[in-house]
Amino acid sequence: MEKSAASKKTAANASRKSAGKKSAAKKTAAKKTAAKKTAAKKTAAKETAAAKKTAGKTGAKAAAAKQVPPLKRQAPAKKPAVAPGKATAAVKGAAPAKTVAPKPPRGESRTALVRRARRIDRELAEVYPYAHPELDFENPFQLVVATVLSAQTTDLRVNQTTPALFAKYPTPEDLAAAVPEEVEEILRPTGFFRAKTKSVIGLSKALTEDFGGEVPGRLEDLVKLPGVGRKTAFVVLGNAFGRPGITVDTHFQRLVRRWRWTEETDPDKIEAAVGALFPKSDWTDLSHHVIWHGRRICHARKPACGACPIAPLCPAYGEGETDPEKAKKLLKYEKGGFPGQRLKPPQAYLDAGGKPAPPLGAG
Image 1 (cartoon, rainbow, N blue to C red):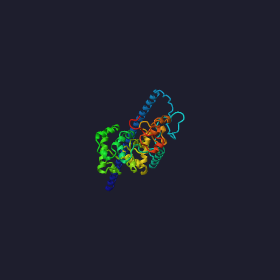
Image 2: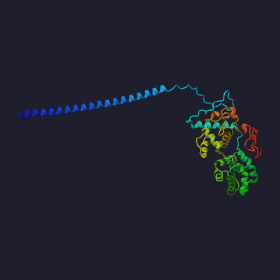
Image 3: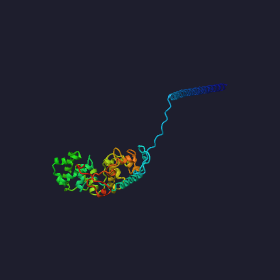
Image 4: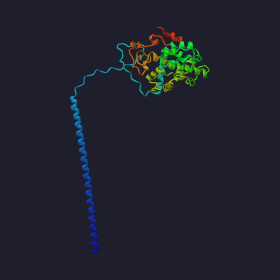
């Protein structure tokens, strides 16, 4: 009997504990449910407030739009100018709009760039088959001196000045022993005559003392001479010794950037970039073609786009005058019927209709 009573008591205690646990579980579930409902109510409230705010802004914009007067009807935009098929062909009707033609895609492949660059050079070779260095010279010494003197002035002015210089000082030994004041007086028309006098006397002394009075035919030797840089050295190598070189003067720099052959601005980097587009054997003639085109047609300030033979290939078409008749008036030297820069030009130039330049002081 005692055992039976004890068993009943134990069962009752277990039942009470089980009931307590169930009650606690129910309370915890109720709390979680209440928390979820509260969070949902807060989220709904935020969404409602955001919707009201957006609606308010939209309404304000709509109201403001109603107050703005209607825009006037604009005339249709003009179509951009299109590069002519041939620069020499006259354009019928009105002159094309003076706008820049669409630029070629930046993604132009290396192969496409090489083909376009070489085609431009071929076209220029047909236009200037008589292209040559525009400094008068009879030997390498005269050419290196004339090239040094051409800095900050025109080849024409140098050509008008050097006859008197070489008549008085025909050899490096003669010029090395010259009185600086006398040389300055001769070189005065070229500008910066004191600095140029120092350079030509200095290079003449170097030629006499280090090279036996002869102009060296190697780049590394030429650039050691006073006043001689890579540009001057390549002019001498290409035109006095027949060794290919690229002459990166101001015209060359301007045109190769307009044609997007390179985006470099440093002359040495331009030389390397452009040189990689052409066979080495083409470098000297390429320099002549580009420089001649820059002096005659593709000018710095006002290029004669309407008279340009390579207009269809030029990404910068439209920067200058596009009307053919107006463009013709901008042409210089033989392209415009004017004398060239050399007093003694090659026969091929004369046969093509070119005219010699007048001597210093002539009409």
